[in-house]
Length: 332
Image (tube, helix red, strand yellow):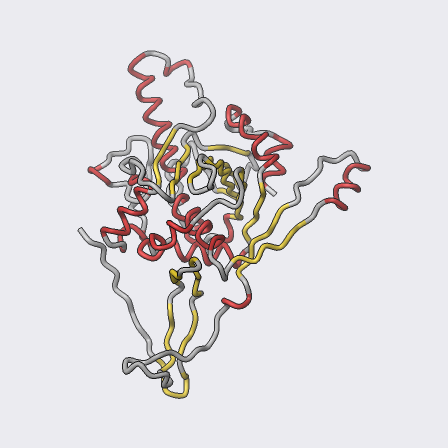
């Protein structure tokens, strides 16, 4: 796991972030399976539905580590690199979440990753705070979803990130809810020291601007994916946590004088919410069969919590098939 590599090797690309290692050691650890990651990746395009789930979201522990393989997130695998000189393709991504309220309804997220080609471990020079109860000053957070706010100009990103597809298709209320639940903040470690050529007053300002732009680029799309994962973890009927106990494995590694590995939980989508055929109530309020059609994955809010309905086929194929093409437009 990425957390094993971080503790064993340290954050090579950003040594100041090693201040997080003790927290990573004691954190409750979760690894996202392929099916869980794919569902969360799909949900990132639906801010309207995501906004409904946020008030119910809580961290599973005061210190929580969540990691995912980049190969299990198609939208991120196909995204362009914003600065070829300072960035590279990523193999694994992890979020260290630290609760800032006893009821676990608010937390701070640090972003760490492993590069695909070099295997180097790195961290972002920006953190993100989320609060599921009270509105935050989300003006800075808007750039995490809509990078062109106020005609924002990038000087250091050769391929600036565009607006998030979920933001573009969301209504005004959903945009407000998502942005007010998140904000950009300083990480729990020092910013990288500038090279000698940036130490004069003019160039130091340019250095700070470059670091800020690269940090925004690092976080592009990450917050909404994280929120989708937390929403699935808090859904009553979705997450199935499979314990991966490394105790016996570590006994052998101790004899071989190898570093110990962390026990953790692997998150899967529960089998009961996999693709299924179903009947539904028609326009007349009866339980008569309808033609087969596709339903998008979405959350439903109930008094007992939030429930997730996976994308599925509904209706009778014998009566025919309904094919729909959606044209999604955002509010201006």
